[in-house]
Amino acid sequence: MTVNTKIIAYEFDYLEPGSIEEALGMLREHGAEARILAGGTDLLLQIKQEKLLPGYLVDISKIKELSHIKEDGGLRIGAAARLADVREYCSRHPEYIALYEAISVLGKPQVWNMGTVGGNLCNASPAADTAPPILIYGGRVRLVSEKGEREISVEKFFKGVNETVLKRGEILAEIVLEPLRDNSGSAFKKTARVGADISKLSCAVSAERDGQKCSLCRIALGSVAPVPMRARGAEDVIKGSEVNEDMLRRAGQKVAEEVRPIDDMRSTAEYRREVSAVLFRDVFSTAWERSGGEISWER
Ligand SMILES: Cc1cc2nc3c(=O)[nH]c(=O)nc-3n(C[C@H](O)[C@H](O)[C@H](O)COP(=O)(O)OP(=O)(O)OC[C@H]3O[C@@H](n4cnc5c(N)ncnc54)[C@H](O)[C@@H]3O)c2cc1C
Image 1 (cartoon, rainbow, N blue to C red):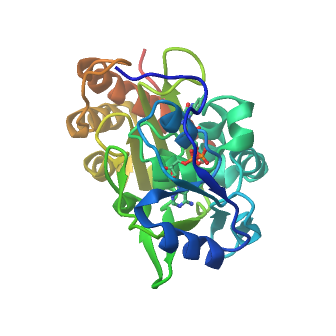
Image 2 (image 1 turned 180 degrees about the horizontal axis):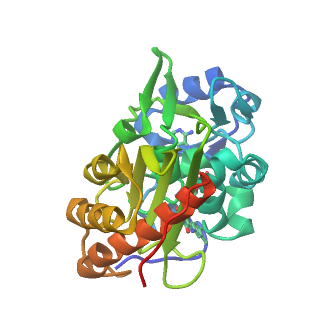
């Protein structure tokens, strides 16, 4: 059984590098014993529960070159940028509204003031709330190590439950999002036991409008597979089609076929599959309305 002692009942060394270079050196020096600390809202819980007992915590939260949130060929979010600041930025930039909506239901302000988007992705929970919006914004991550750097899509970053492609000694430095084009809209929603709880399932959609047709659509879901996933089959149903109730019903059915949910303490696979079609239609409708489109529902 998992214990939560509420206190950290063992000793570790706390390291506070001032630059990426220094952090990478510390990770090399302490190897498997070291763990990166950003906001600590996932990591410290795992330490309290004794699921992890690292000898060294390398705190990247004060590294200035990782704290940016800026537009430069897309939205660039540094790994040390707080969820609260990212949320505030997205509240002023409607092209990233789905990320704003996701952070708004990710815990409460105490969590936003500590946690980071990078930590949410690196923890690699299937329920990570920032993952679906990042997937629909074509998100990429820049990973740095002493050997150099690489940039990969967020879809390829996740390997399994709590597993990513990050190698030992590698830091996620930055997340890069593509802005939506004109005539586009996006949205995010989740269902949970109570507000701001971990999701039973979540969905984000971006839709680009060409008259009454949807020319481009991205659909991403959380808590319905080992990793946050795109529903590409449903995207194919939508792309180039006229948006109406019948098309959305078919796309929703496709979403329900594509998800791979399980039973766990938060929900059942059956509930998740059924609700994925409904939640998708709801989120798509909001994104479509934000793009300036209309849907007439038969009653
Ligand atoms: C009360 C509470 C409520 C919560 N509610 C939600 C919720 O509703 N939805 C949700 O998705 N999450 C929720 N969380 C989980 C957590 O807050 C988020 O996942 C948060 O974004 C983690 O960010 P962090 O900076 O605190 O990560 P940390 O805890 O610092 O790190 C998490 C993991 O990622 C690694 N890591 C962090 N940054 C990097 C990096 N730059 N490079 C490489 N590895 C890195 C760490 O080593 C660690 O393994 C909740 C947590 C709490 C305590």
